Image (cartoon, rainbow, N blue to C red):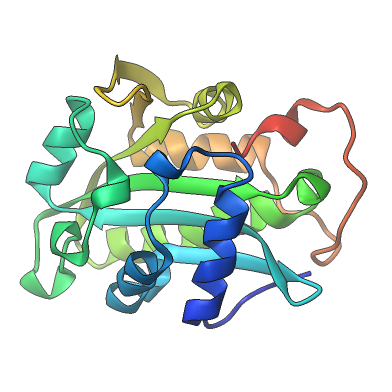
Length: 207
């Protein structure tokens, strides 16, 4: 099992198939559009591979302020999001609004290092953004399953509202996100590897 250094369209096609195991198609962005997101902001999508298949991935994207305002009001379905909705840091924004739009981990890998590895990838990315002088306003997330709601709460997020497409919208500041990731999802000493799923609460986190 390894974190992929570069992603191709075929990886996003695998991600789409993985999502369909857990989510309704109404909540899933077409693979080509997700790939477009990645090409626009490569640091915002991370994936884990095992046996030549994507077994986990996560999207954390900086969105434009008007998109953020729609998300927190429960009026934005990210399955329709395009690169036009993603912030362009070349425009030197004063602050960044991050949207954790999706996290999926295949059942067999729920107790592996996949989820901590992805979360820590984003801690590094967000730290770089903050050091560049861009203030991180907050991190928002939509949850569409019970496990997704639990995951949001474990990240220290507070519930804002129920959306107009039957999801729950959560939010926290960067300091809270970082503190909860470090406390609840420490990186293991051993390299990425598959471990047998147990009844621990972490097995339910991703969806």
